[in-house]
Image (cartoon, rainbow, N blue to C red):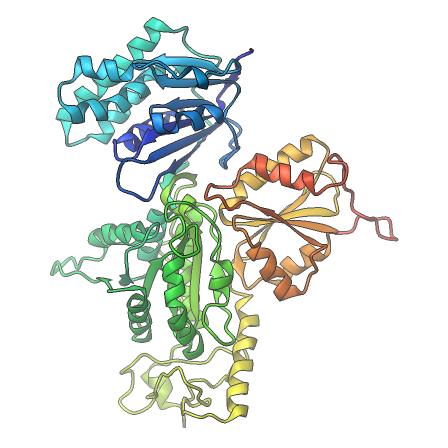
Length: 618
């Protein structure tokens, strides 16, 4: 058996028990590699219970800069007997299985094509520590120290990180460094270090940072001008409001009085939360809520009200695996259809699809401008993978000269100039009407905001022609919206092709890597990343220009593909699905495999059909 050999290119997975403090140690490992200038992509895979079940932490290391899941595991560090049989089965042939050999390994688990390395972690802890909790916590730190020797990680980087992590708690620094040294010395004394898989310091990260999407969303809401957050806690979106609260305490405090210039309300349920957001937005505040699939289901009726009454509303949906409770701590992109057509009747909601923390920040801030400019709900669709995992991202930037776009708002002077104010009167031809803030004028601009049918002057009516006129205007506004939402991004293949892939959100990184794999096999595909719904004309043109388009998404029912077919009436022969819905982020190998399965012969190089002029069709 030949052991795997690689430098700065591997996948390592940690198999732990939930509630044992392993997450901080595993995060220390990932940050050490990042500090060494290596692109990393950590994924925390944890159960929805509090303690006792298996949990995993996967780190992708790629000097080439691939940040999506590759698929497969090169090194497995397993300290959980419950999952050990499954864990060793995931290791690639030639890979490494590292385990706690205080107790001997079950002979039935031994694989001849894997290098097995035993670390007596429990014994080392029992010899060094008397307190049971210390034994549990420091076991994780000891194996990080051992990995530093086995993989040739700069030990100085680890000690510096420990100092940074426990700044202000200096008494914890020395014992943590000591635990690292225990593992490091044991590995150096008992194994040939480093392994065939190892790391070397590089400068591949530039000015990139490690940041989770939920934190970026919370900060984006601050910079976007939000002063009100109403929400009901739900995994995996709760930390969005936690981050908003953290930054609001720094940036929303009146310097003179110390008063808080913001409000955060934990509502009794999701229905109440979205109702508070709509009420605050109607009154002129910039307000938002954050939820996940079950909350979105409950908010559907109020989203219909905001759509029909044309009230700016911002909702951050951090998707998880459904339906019902589903798998609360697993990721999916499965709320697309329920969000796009949220509420009964004829509704269409604006969706934004960020793929990085930087876009979470940018789109999060932009959501408030869009909501007020377009006078409609804006639903930003992220997911657990992006929201709760650290992701490499360009640094966040903000132009202090930027002004908020409050949209079409009439002040008292403008109302005085009008003979009669029509809240739902389209005077500019873009289907977006003028609104006012409550109390702007003592007499003019007063009207009832209601969810029942009304005419252009907000007067209640059930006349069919008035209802139809309003609904047609809302449909016309949908065309205006296309001009304002983020446009799609196109990446052309290095050779002409009449086939393409289309993806969105967190499917991007793995999709781009899969395209590189396919190109190495002579299969070239153009690519488009959709960043918003409604789709603009570029999306339709891109699909029309290709014979076959693979739509990559993380749900069972091909929801984005369904949305494309509904909006553009493309047939199933043109749009082909590439799906993943097991709760894990989609991997590059999975995408490659599914595309190959749908290509005749598995090795065909698709070429664009040439036009009569001899030029390649675009």
